[in-house]
Image 1: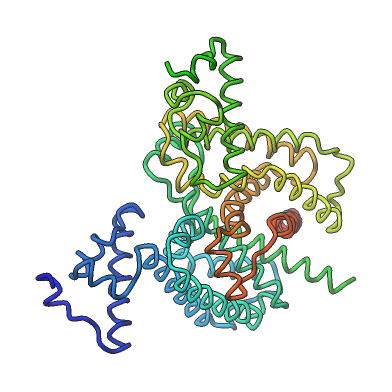
Image 2: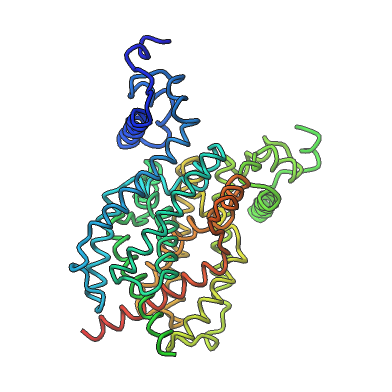
Length: 228
Length: 228
């Protein structure tokens, strides 16, 4: 047992374990906020939490598992925030109303950075370096949240059919995986964009415009199906 | 000079150099076709081309530069294929016409796999491991192709305004970066999807549905702008 571990008591109850895990996720998020994915190492996380690397391994199998859990936590937060939207504030009958809904959704997604930041690394890096049982558990939770989120969008009137809202959410995740790194370039990318005049767009504004096109497209296609 | 290099003469003219580079890109593509990104190493490429690693370095700085050039070549091929679409075959006045256009575009994009396959790795992996001058040259070419592609979509009547078609192409690149890995899971991801019932969608069908929603959304928003 190291000096650090003497003050960092191992969690006994489930509640204590969840608290520890939340602390690990918070530490990882703060490392990401200050640097980039490359700065996230088990040693850096352990140092910030105040425990040893060996102690970390009681809670998670790898840094990718921590990042996966952080991504899931951000989805959970987004779902909670969506539940908090006042149904009366949404007017889905007009394009202006859909634009306002896109505005609200984009602001919410942009304020939960880990959804885009980790979504960009999810399929190509994170998911390939975790234990199968961890991935299975996370996929189960994602499936549950996708179902809740899709139902919520139908209840709020943004979609008439669950199939459409589910598809919308899946496409949104895929889009964000590409949009986040494109709107948050690393130094060499920023330098190349500057030299060539390649545009660096705003994450939130791009999301808003994208969401408007999507919501309007789905709505018009649904109306056309109803007409025929 | 190794035994291999004795038979692999160094290119003297610009034309020879381009031929060599094309051979290197073909070899890399075949390695990707048979395996994954992790199988692409300079040694594997050199072996397939029939030269030494040292000889490879006359043409490219790193494996990421090769992948970047392969991505650019695939964009070039897609642009050429788009130019070949018969304008008379497109009916943009109806939703059915836009669905047919989406069908054609999706089939074309799916047949140029490197656009999605490398697009998924582009911003997070490839672009961060190349020389600045290489990235600048590639960004310049991408800017040129984006301008040509946007103009072409306006000429073909799919968009009325360049700003819309440019934005559509940028969003398409971002979407594909997330869609490709989601529709081409690695073994552990496939296993987790199977165990949980998480859907693995078709790349081409997802592209087609996405393109339809986008084209319809942009068209309706443009009509609304014209009305007001």
